[in-house]
Image (cartoon, rainbow, N blue to C red; front, top):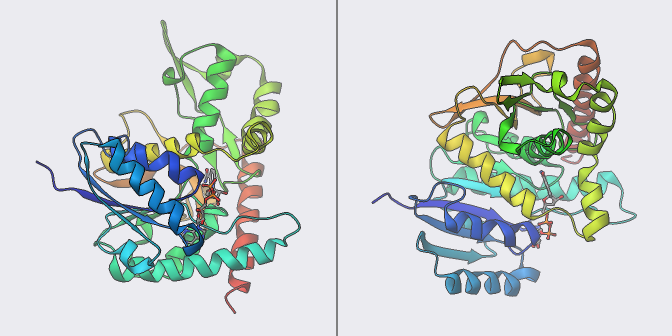
Length: 331
Ligand code: NAI
């Protein structure tokens, strides 16, 4: 039998946590033959709720779940973890300045970075979900210098999946037949959902999305804004932000990273930029990646037209500004 993998979920008493931990315990993240031990961290005001989640995990009698650590102690939470999904953070509340929210998250991610660096298992893989996801991941990277930069990522898979969903609805095809959309840049409304290389499996072979949709005005307009603003649309409808789709996307992200992407398919991940596609190096930026043997690689050589170039730059500029703001909170 396989050794259990220890998976940390921070903010586990929150909305996404509540959707995510049962998925992990059922094998959605790491496979139906992979036992797991869940480490759940939250802050003291949520300790009782966190314990309630632990009780429900016991009650669900998941065969793959070999143990649960539920704690408000960061060191205990991080000890020995192989995978860390960082969902906890300080939410933006009405009337708050951007700088104040950034400052709270910078201090959270700085201290959790140190705990992970000192106590996580070697080669721990980190996924940051909490917003501002790219910049929280960058702070985590900066304050955990012994964790390889390639092990620190942020979630843009939800945006990627939303783009697949929009194309599938528009063409009335199965979502599993649509592939290779790209989310470039920040997990924010400046992200660029790019369909220029996306395809659909049809009875007569793989066809470019652009050829099938035949409506460039929609693809260059409403499609992009719908994906960019989908989070806000969910909040409007549910009065709560997306949780089941975010949890599912977090599982997709880790599963593909660990187990590999299918041949001929890429996915979007926020990763540490090496300057590919003239994106500034040193940002956590969402790129198209393929994964194999537990490592991601940015897909190279895709053509970027003028329309796309502007959008890649715009979201990169926003990330550079966020980075500067985050650094200004450190002093
Ligand atoms: P939530 O407010 O329901 O849960 C957040 C949890 O984090 C709470 O239980 C809170 O007590 C906890 N927390 C706060 N500070 C903490 C700390 N220092 N250590 C550990 N836990 C801490 O929020 P929800 O809906 O679960 O969302 C979580 C985060 O995910 C938010 O930042 C949200 O903006 C982000 N998000 C990101 C998405 C993405 O695609 N990257 C998609 C959807 C949400």
